[in-house]
Amino acid sequence: MGLSAYLIVSTLLFAIGAFGFMARRNGILMLICIELMLNGVNLSLVAFNAYQPAPAVNGAIFALMIMAVAAAEATVGLALVIAIIRTRQTAEVDQYRDLKE
Amino acid sequence: MTVGLGPLPGLQTQEGHLKRGTVESGRPLAGAARRRVADTRVRSKELQRERSTLDITGILFFVLAIGVVGAGLAVVTLRNVIHSAIAMMVCFGSLAGMYALLGAPIVAAAQVLIYLGAISVLIIFAIMLTQAGDASLAAPFHRQVPFAALAALIVVGLIGWAVIQTDWGAAAQAVAVNLEQLAIALFTDYALPFEIISLLLLAAIIGAIFLARRPEEDERAG
Image 1 (cartoon, each protein chain N blue to C red):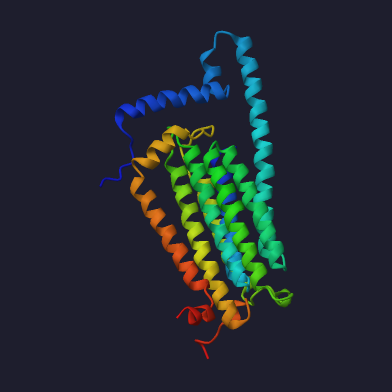
Image 2 (image 1 turned 180 degrees about the vertical axis):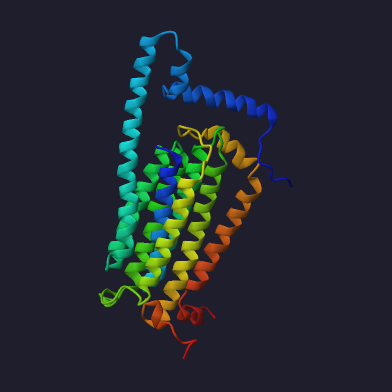
């Protein structure tokens, strides 16, 4: 399989994540969709690394670092969502309208 | 401190040699076949073997791609959040297989450890802690679904078009990551980002503990 096939899969995964982030109402599901988008980017990085004309490791290192940052993001994001759900008693993000009213 | 991209010159030649050795012994590919033009029988046999490897790789790629995209679609369309989380685990597992297919087993292992092992469990815990009954099953989508779908389709169209139109000048075959080279680069050229990430993880742990703490415990402590 060529580089383009992997890049198409990565694009599809990113777009699915972006769609879910915009369309779903559940806060935790929005975080899951962010993870999907990050994974799509990771796939493109590893694919670029594998198909470089000269043997390289930079893309794999970038992917590993993005994984670490994603883990930190998931930890803090879930803690935030849990704190908000605890005070608002709902996971639906369109119920969080205190600033609007 | 300098964060350069190239390793030491002496190292590079040695690594390059090592690299070529591993790739040739690991997979009988086009390079080996081309060099033995004289012996046509050996050549045809090698070519045959190459074609069968390509077929297996292609089949694996399609299975994994269907796993990734199908599970991703399931994540965003299933009504129950816990089902979405399980579909997300399938998606991450297929991605790990794809990394292995791309010749990056270290990234595949990290994917299984971090995403399947840590983040999925964290997310499932959060869902179990917060979902009260099936309150969220009634209307999982915003009213802005058409616009979201339109935006996603535009993203797919534009990036897909760019991917297909661009001549990447890429290698014909995926080249495996040399683990030794990766480790050396990670602890020399990328030592500073590596340390900064450890600091970031510490900050994330402290922040998460602070955010998730209940207010009552705060009063009891103080």
